Amino acid sequence: GESVGLHLPTLSVQEGDNSIINCAYSNSASDYFIWYKQESGKGPQFIIDIRSNMDKRQGQRVTVLLNKTVKHLSLQIAATQPGDSAVYFCAENFGNEKLTFGTGTRLTIIP
Amino acid sequence: ETGVTQTPRHLVMGMTNKKSLKCEQHLGHNAMYWYKQSAKKPLELMFVYSLEERVENNSVPSRFSPECPNSSHLFLHLHTLQPEDSALYLCASSQEDGDNSPLHFGNGTRLTVT
Image (cartoon, rainbow over all chains, first blue to last red; front, side):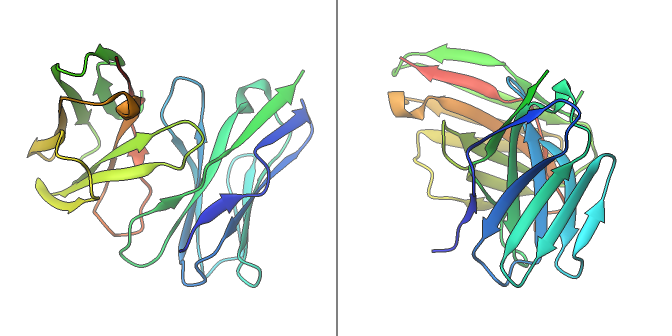
């Protein structure tokens, strides 16, 4: 069946460095993608989204890249800070179907 | 403040108890959702309500019973749960169901079934 997954379950990055979190999706018809951040004891928090008619979208310190050819989504976080430590997961959507979520990558910022 | 408030934050209940989870959204959204989050698993959609009407029941056991009295409030009534039902239960809302807009989540209720 279709699924959304992440390449790495954990990622450690030095504070101040840039981080890249990757996500592979298998439904080539998916047309909407979201990145969420979940801190300990909290619910998922929307970070950024992108539609399939775009390849790149930028937010504050974050950039999402979409490569439809290889069905790959990435989240780049610039100049990481301790507050960026969290679990990040992607979600995909096709048409009116419900969002399908990945299992998440735990990002740890090393001081 | 997430705009979606869930109570209680933590709940411990025995298998014969009856309890309810409450969710309130202050965002003016028309769709509300219940998700289950277990360790090392993707979020599992349980129920979807759009304009107070249930539009999806994702094969959830009948021991979970949702209620949506209005577009701002959502409940999940629990009875005769099993230990494997222990998880984080997340409520979410969106502008409309199926309109490709992001979900806004509450902070969840951590449920432990003993």
